[in-house]
Image (cartoon, rainbow, N blue to C red):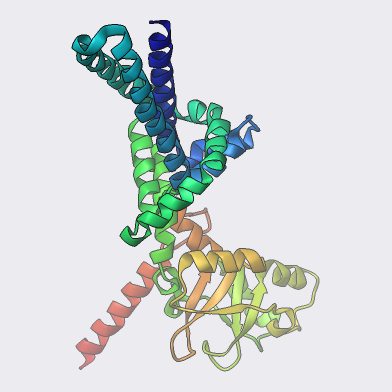
Length: 347
């Protein structure tokens, strides 16, 4: 009788351990694992390895669970026949099966799911041990299921759409602010926004001829509402650089008005109008630039774009006390409509 109780408890213990570990490994997220790794918690790096090789980990756990249940059931059945005889062994098997379902499957999986992060970390070393011990069996199983296309690793990293859903759910439950959720959504939209969608069109670009002397351009400089001004040779399709209005005003104050704008020019980058906002942001940050010239498919100047134009896609319109036009793209559209209307009227 004692041996029967010991074998029954051993089966339930192994089944409990396998079921709870499997549920916790499935439920723990990559974010929770990264947090534990950053905090230096024991077993976190092993858990990360188990999660990255989740198919191998799950197969190892399933092997343990089935070996315990099958071998254990055979051993318990043999002992139960000696203890209860053939008449009562069926009833004992039914009761034991019910107990295993409850205490070996339902309860442990619930515990593993609800305490996934900590439970998976505490059992990480055991899973690694099982992966090593059962490695030959795991390789054999993967070989057998390969024709069915089931041997590839499961996807554990969240994609873009899942992150946006997580942000929305977190906002709904009060874990993050609405502004934070909105910022996350807008970050992913940068890939779909092109430079031509957010640039300042050439029709409203404030630019000056490079050959102008400072004293000749003084009036325009005093009324300028931008800090960096493109300068050109023949026309706007011949941009030769940019000048910083601060440098020009300082030069004027020091009596250097006879110098031309070209003498203060800095290099500027030229980018296609089809480049995405996120790639452009990376480029501007890498080159430590705040402005770029946007060119169309024919190489002509389509407009200018600034770091502020991209940041506005994330945080909304940025307006200071010197901005006379909140959105120059709107102004450009109005000017275009006015020109078309005037042309139609004169005709």
